[in-house]
Amino acid sequence: MSWRPPGRPEWVRAINDGAVLPLREEAELPFERDALLAEARARLGLVDGGVEDFCHAGFEEDEFLEPLERLLPALEQEADLTIMGRWMTRRFLLRLLEVRLQLMAYVRADPGVREEPIEAPWVVAGAPRTGTTILHTLLAEDPARRAPLGWELLRPVPPPAAAGAETDARVGLADRELVLPQTVVTGLRAIHVYGGRSPKECLSAMSFALRSEEFTARYHVPSYEAWLEAADPLPAYRMHRLVLQVLQRRRGRSDWVLKSPVHLHALPTLFRVYPDARVAVTHRDPLTMLASLTSLIATLRYAHSDTVDFPAIAAAHAQRYRRSFQHLVEWTDTACLPAQQMHHSHYADFLSDPLAVVADVYARFGRPFPRALEARLRAALAARPAGEHGPHAYRFSDLGLDEALERAALSAYRERFAVPDEAGVAGEVAP
Image 1 (cartoon, rainbow, N blue to C red):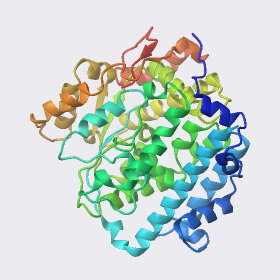
Image 2: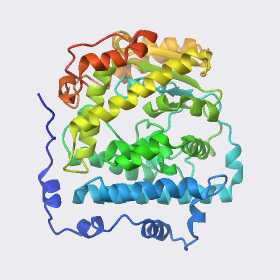
Image 3: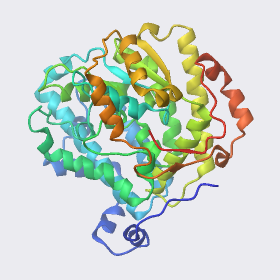
Image 4: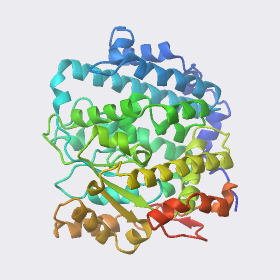
């Protein structure tokens, strides 16, 4: 089997083939910095305040402009977007700019929000496709803990109140944005399900800093990707913290449970911003992880472009995770990370007994595991039946990588964390 682009509905094919529809005119507008900034202000009914209105409370102008000025040319010149892809991307960018304006305005009106304590958050931080989503989902089932939902991270201003959240109009706005890519291509839901009411990963908050793998996952933007990998992640983590502070402003202190595979690349920065964080790292055979991840990224990109280079995606992610896993070994062995605040688990153990893994997380982080929680966890697992959205098929041999060389390059990581091989695995139901 070699990777083949998934199917597209007829209406998407018609749009991409040049059907004269109202969205085509909007899609063909250039990704031009000042025009996008002006449109974001106009959508909110704001006068032109210069770049300053996008920056406040310690967020410097260059922290915002530099990534934007790296991203927009890459989208225009490298991503090779379809008409539908351009239209979705423009809407995505405008939402990010609008919400950043709202965040900065909120801090100006209520500077005390920056003093909101974010205390000892639990963070799931394994590599992609290693069970991070389901572990996060189960930890979020504890009524004593709070996970940010999709609509909250996409549109956090004004701070949501506990009452009325189900009827907040932002739920529908976020749900439509998150579900749209799943309607543009078939098979994406079998790999990862998105929705406005589901727990959402930290990446969406970091995107307001324009420093985010959300862009590199959706688009082929190698110049921006190279810049992002070399850039300081601290502004993205400071923006992430501000979003959490805004979200809890009307509800009081929250025991947050968070998740994103991107934290694996920047654990020292995460602990710099959240020094009392408790971090759960999930582990899985990295070759299986790479095969599954490459399939996901290729499908996401195909939602936006006809041009998807599957082997190039595999090679880029193999290189990145070789570095990240090596860093994890070094950070662990040199006590760069606070060992008492770290938990490690294996995907195979989770498949065998997920409740035992969750109980072990509680024990490691010094919290009693509420036995009354077991029924909720079993119900959450039952609500995600295997194959609900169809199979996710992939195979390492499709990646164009040398299996023996990759295993050798990753041997230090696998030995340090006792990660078992999954040789011969050719598909899965996405966790």
